[in-house]
Image 1: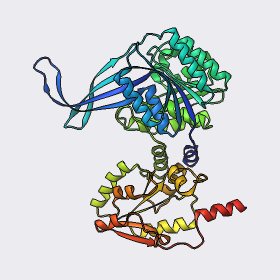
Image 2: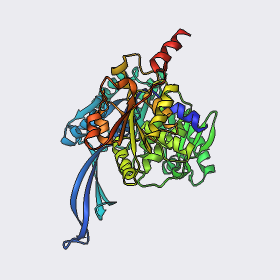
Image 3: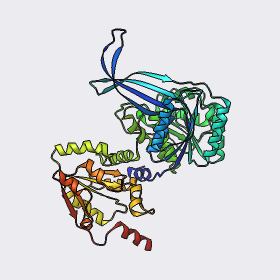
Image 4: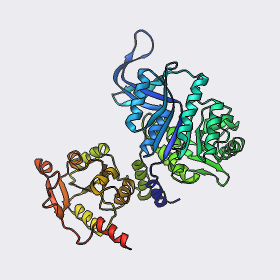
Length: 491
């Protein structure tokens, strides 16, 4: 599939609902400067610099799903401890539905504490990991509770994910009950399996996504080549009565085997920083893509991009739709993507300023792009070396234009703007007005249309305070998104 078609699919994934069942964990990172060797034992002494907490295990999948713009219904357990509450807070902040995540007293929240040494305050190296967990099966009453929760939420889901880290939750009978109920309801069940020989508890699922090592152990075939991956995928597909088997092959992409497709899906070469969380990202992206109506091959292609971006980050990290759009644009155009979050954009703008480039800023909804928009953005480019477009989010547009707008979602609108030569960066903002964004961009030139002459240009005073200027662009008569939409309705 060419990048243009892939871009259209990625920006149109929407917001499906994923029902996620698995081992929910809290990842803890303790960063310390490596100072010296201890006089007590031949070990490094670390001076703690900071602590960070992140969603791990199935919670990582939930965070990935939510970052991709989908909804996530979580089913599993945590302890009643402080780490359990911290994990719940992190998931709640992202918008996860935790009504199916039971708090139990008999088990601690699963935590993985990583001790990270910092050389020269910045170069990271994991030195030690400490796990706190109980991996025995739950009591029968707990499984009964979880199954009832599952039944209640199944009808709301577009797809089901089982994320198994072999921590005792996903026992064979429980898995088979969930798979049977999902099949009866016409829902796909996707499985990210653990490292073990027997995958029979996943029989009847829609697909399974083991990595190279996991597939080798489960199939009995050493997956050391593409041919071996084909054999292993075919064997798992047949043995488990799957719709598809997907074996992830790190730098070689993934191997997909189904009733209609059997081929390697390649990926772009990457500078791998940390593979932690790549499998979680793969499962989340495949789930969202399939729920949105993609076929298996397309889902794997998009997931390769998402997982590739994830391994370039440290630790368990999420990847957004905008990052995937950037990657597709970069592949197609051979240059860096233009869609940036403001935190990342500020650093780049600082570099441009040091290089003597003038930064021009404008903002708007840019819903249905027309000639007036094109001429306006060309005008912006004529007044600056770097043009930054602040794009109203979907929520912001609804506040300004009403519940029927926008016509095109924020990812589609951002992708169209990024495709224009006269636009250098696009950053999405959620506020009803752009003042906060303008304060962070600090443009040399603030540009708005001439129709704002009597309204008062938001940000004019701020830009003037450091010597910047505000310029009003001439309007193309008779051209507006609203007029274009009304004309289309009359056709």
